[in-house]
Length: 252
Image (cartoon, rainbow, N blue to C red):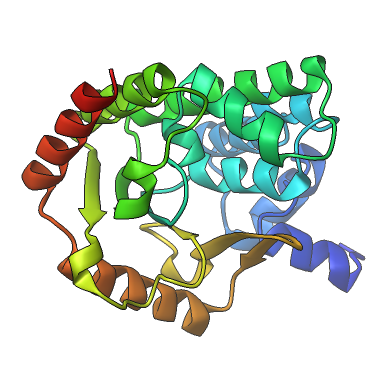
C-alpha cells in the first residue's frame, strides 16, 4: 500500500478512517471477494469518514472534549466520577450555562456560552439513543450541596438527575462524606470502555492544565479499579436517588 507508519498507526488506533479505495485494494488480501460483503464493508468505511455531529463545535469547544464525545459515541460502557459538579452529559441548560460563564475562560462571549450549552444538550441524547452505552455515575457528596446559579437552577438540575437515573442504562450514586478518604479525591475522571476491544479503553481527565486522554491499558485498568472501590463506598442507587430528591425539594 506504500503507507507511512504514521498513517498505519492512525488507522489502527481509529484516529482516522480508511478510504474506500484503500479498503477496496486491501480486501482481496484478506480473501474477501464476495460482492455483497465487499459493498457492506465499503459502505461502513464511507460512513466512518463522515464527521460526527460534534465536529461543528470545533471552533468553540476544546479538542479533548470533542475527542471524548467521539469515543463515547462508540462505547459500550462509561464510568464517571465527579468531585465538583454534575457531569456535563447530565447537565441541564441553566446549570451548564452558569458553570461555563464562571469557569470556561476569563470572559466567554454569550455566543460561545450558548454554543457550548447546545453541545452539552445534544450530548445528552446519547443517554437514551438506540443501543446506548451503560452509564455509571458516582458523585462526591459535595456536588449535591453546591449551589450553581441559583437554588431554583440547582433544584431543577437535581430533579433531572433523578429522572435520568430511571433510565435502564443509567446508574447514579453518591459517595457520602462519611466514606472518608477514597481513591477519587484528587480529581474527577471518566473511563470509556469498548466491549469488543478492551485494550482500546481510555480514561479522560479534565484538569487545570487542559484535558488529558490516557490509552495505556494498564493505567486504564488502574482507574477502573479505583472507580470500583469508590462505588463500594457509595450509597446504593436507591438511597442516592432519595437523597437527590430530598435535596432538590429543599432547594426549590
